[in-house]
Length: 180
Ligand SMILES: [Zn+2]
Image 1 (cartoon, protein in one colour):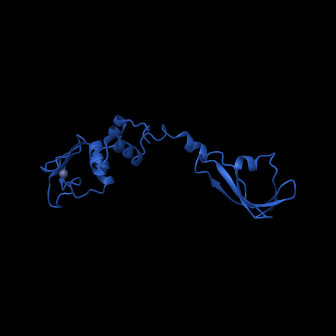
Image 2 (cartoon, helix red, strand yellow):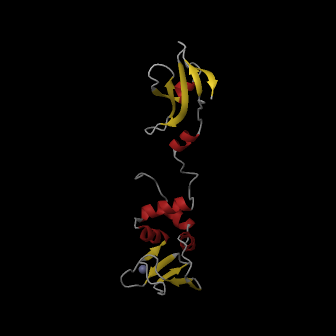
Image 3 (spheres, helix red, strand yellow):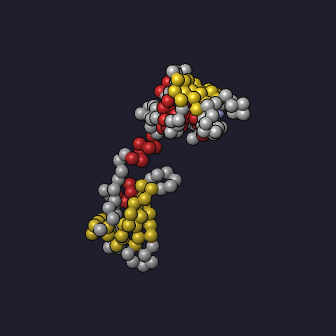
């Protein structure tokens, strides 16, 4: 989702290093004032090393190992842990900690969940007396439209799909004979 918008500042304000450490289950850090020290989760240093320091108040981290030297803020930390860029890291944080979700709900999502038309499984008849069995409903993989999956109970017993909107509408040619 390349067009997804993310507010870096908002994410940085909402998430502190402690929350991120908790998210990763990083608990074995020695506490000293605002500082936490321990093995670096980024370059996966030896469990006894204390190259990695976090300053909770400054919301920053720093690894002193000469072959790692990772440092930065919460976004840099997640980017290093996930091996992604800071933008992807911000999106992950927004998702993990539910930041700004109310403002960013996607319209498709609302549509897919709202106003769901139902066509119950059962035997239906068309105006010519042909019988059809509605087997289930399904979602179109292309546009998430609700579809009815049904088959004819005569001839070749072929399977069909129709949009729920058409099948379930009041001027629909199908009438329910027997619910299943
Ligand atoms: Zn490191």
